[in-house]
Each structure stands twice: as structure tokens, then as C-alpha cells.
Length: 394
Image (cartoon, rainbow, N blue to C red):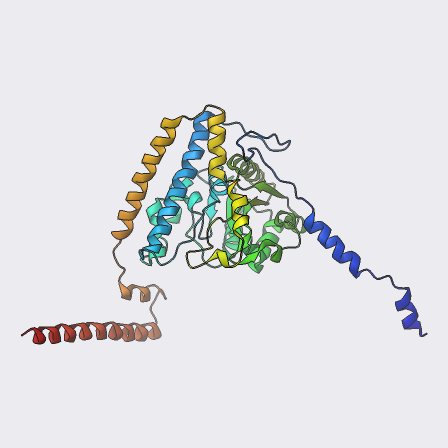
């Protein structure tokens, strides 16, 4: 036996232990901050608590209820051909409303393309969210008016934008905070890892709010990470916490805590809201092709809106008149959304060439001329067709 083979024979086999340890880590039940059980009863948590008045609780319910109605109306409009695409938030109302209501007016938000509930909390008119999905504008609102940035389609890039903005906030000496929203799929993007690194090193006042809705389009969370997503923060040097994403009270309490850490100069926090996307990834997706109906049924039992409604009724904070009035208010909102979408004017086709370069460019001028000639060819065809129809009628 050679020296090399003898050493190899004495070397313990450790690969099996590594795999089993990884599986053990993955299967271990992670800590979950919960303040409101699925049946509507309050739950105590030693580190995070919150006390709200009946008016505040009813306000959170109203936010979630109207946001869901708006979302359902937008989905229906897409099915009717009024929108090109829609990304539904169905099932994620508690994560968005709870975190959104934790923000101060001077905080700044960098969303993805699904944060309709956060936009509602920031005072963005719901109808303004629809222009981009109808193809008539690039966003429809002024980010500076509500400290709510335009929707981000590129997966994960907003985490870097938020970190850079937060570094600037710290340089300016302000005590406001920044929130970056992203999903479980985006957590695998390099941009997010880079944002974590910069935020930790520069102690940026940013909260990374990951809505883990279990599916990155058709890829389940176990294909995104060996460990629970919130534990990734440890490797970058800042805390992470997993919260029940269907519990609006827990999302509110944990986000407030994370924002206060940021404002007090304690650096970034990763919040993983453990929730579920009840609908499709977007209206171009068919979730029945990659997940079972039983999975959705299990999560429907944890519905965030039904949970808070049960709590309101258990505590005597809301009666039938409150819920009936809210139904009427949602009908008014839905009607306004439908009318606003159908009244949106078509954009000028040539406008897409106007803001490519600040000082103009010869190649863009050439492309503009080519596109104008292409558009004019349709007008000539329509004119000839009208003439042919007129001659045929004589």
C-alpha cells in the first residue's frame, strides 16, 4: 500500500455527515413571530408585541379588504383585455399592509411589481398602478410625492437601489429609513447578495423585506435556499427574523422594530414574511401545472383577511354594519378603477424615442424615421381599404 493510499484509507468519510447536517438544518422548524393565530386569537411573543385600538384594527382590516378588491378588479380587467399583464398580491395582504403601515412619511420604499398594498399605504392612487400594465406609461406616479419608487421589473435590482439610497440617507444625517421589497426567488439574485454586503459594511439604515410566498414562478423555495431565507442575514453580519406573513399584527410589529433599528444607527435587518401566493405569479402563469390544489387549500385556512375579521368579531370590535359598509366602499372603488382604466388615453407611439439620449443621437433619429414610415404604411393601407369599400358600394 502506498503512502497516499494509506492516508486515504485512514481519512474519515465525511460527505454523508455533511448532507445529513444540511438536511437537518433545512428541516428544522424555524422560529416564527406570530401575534394573531389563524383562528383570530391573540398570541404572545417575548420579543415582539403590539397594542392597537379598535379603530386601528378596523383600519388594518379596511386596508387589506380594499386592496384585495382592487387586486381582483385588476385581474378581471386583464382577462377582459384591458391590461396586458397583472401581478396579483392575493394572499399577501397582511405582509404588505402590516409593513406598509409601519412606515413613517419620510421613509422611502423600493418595491418590486407586486407591492399594491404598500402603494395603498403610501397614498398612491390605485388607478395609477395600472398604467404600466396597460402600456400607457412607465409608472404613472411621482416617486418623490409619496416616497414610493416606481415598480421594478428587473428581479432584485431594487435591493441595490435601496441600499445606495440608504447610504445617502446616512451621509445626510437624516433619521429616516429605507425598505426594499423582494420575493423568495429574488433572494437568489446576485444583486441582493451585493446589497446585503454593502448594507452591512456601511451600516446602511435599510430593511430588506422578503415576501416568501413559497414559489418563484414555478420553482419552490427549497430550490432557492438550503436554509430559511432569514438565516442568510447572519452570514452578512446583520440580524434576520421570520414573521408570519399572514399575520398583519406581527408584520406591523416586526417591521416597526426593524425600522427603529435602522433609524438608531444599528444597520440593516432582513425580515422574511412567510406567506403564500394564492393565485398565479402573473396572469400569464398557470399555477395548476406545478402545485397541488391541496397546498392552496391549506394556506386558505390561514387567510390574512379572514384571520383579522375573526379577531374583530371575537373582541366585539366590528359589527355587521361595518362589514356591509366596507362592501359598499369596495364596490365604489372597483367601479372607479374600471372607469379610470378604460379612460386612459393611448400613448404617442413616437414618444419612446424622445428620452433615450439627453442630447439626441443620429441612430435614434434614423430609427424614429423608420418607425414613422412603418406607422404611415398602415394609414395608407386603411385608406386604400376604405376606398375599395366605397367603390364596391357604388
